Amino acid sequence: MDNAQTGYGRISRLNHWFAAAVVIGMLAVGLYFHDMPRGEEKLYWLHLHISVGALAWLWIMFRVFWRMGRGFAPAMPQAAIKQHISKLVHVLLLTGIAVMFISGPLTIWTGGRAIEIFGLISIPSPIPEMHDFHELLEEVHEITARVMIGLISLHVLATIVHLVFHRQALRGRMWGSLK
Ligand code: HEM
Ligand code: HEM
Image (cartoon, rainbow, N blue to C red; front, side):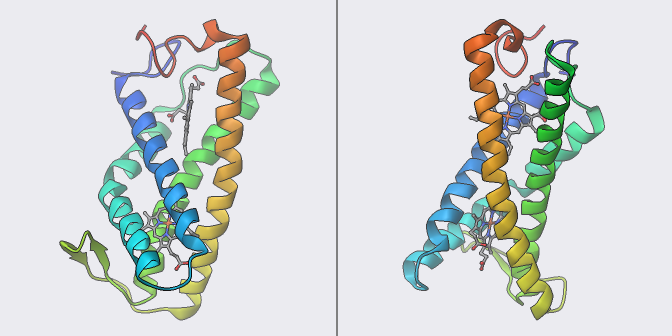
């Protein structure tokens, strides 16, 4: 279950692919409703975004802290500069996930609203309404989303480059046989 010498363990892999799917889905939905005019359709997508985010919240936070607590698997055999860049991008991706999952719920609560999960569960705000902080959090949520698009693109591009040119180095790290 733990990370092996040359790759990530079962829990890390499950965490990685679950979070990747959630983050990409949240990004897609967020960007989709962002420019919509106010109305029923925008509200539908916003509620879906909030409900899925709230349901996934505990697992996503566990995923971030699990990695921070366990550290990364030993770097792939490649130039030291590439190892440093890869680690930096991973740290920034984890930070981005945490910022999105903290700013999202706080945006709702500082706006004086409750978090509604599929109309079934309502989590009332434990904090008072704070207009200026609410505006700031909205900005943070939006800007971090844009930064994450860049980071994820870089991350996926690096994976593709490895798959094409150094396929062997990727084996058993995030998929394939556990060593
Ligand atoms: C389909 C898209 C993706 C692919 C193909 C992919 C592939 C990979 C691979 C192969 C590794 C292992 C790197 C190594 O062995 O050093 C990895 C690690 C990592 N990936 Fe992705 N990834 C994807 C999406 C994402 C997304 C959306 C995020 C976060 C927003 C993310 C965050 C991370 C992080 C933080 C690591 C370091 C290990 C960990 O904590 O999971 N990945 N990814
Ligand atoms: C990695 C996870 C997430 C990503 C990638 C993401 C992405 C986005 C994007 C692209 C937007 C549209 C830009 C904007 O209007 O600010 C947005 C808006 C929003 N998101 Fe997220 N989000 C994530 C997590 C969450 C979570 C966990 C919640 C709450 C439970 C949440 C609540 C909101 C709200 C309330 C808005 C509308 C903000 C506004 O009124 O402008 N998000 N999100």
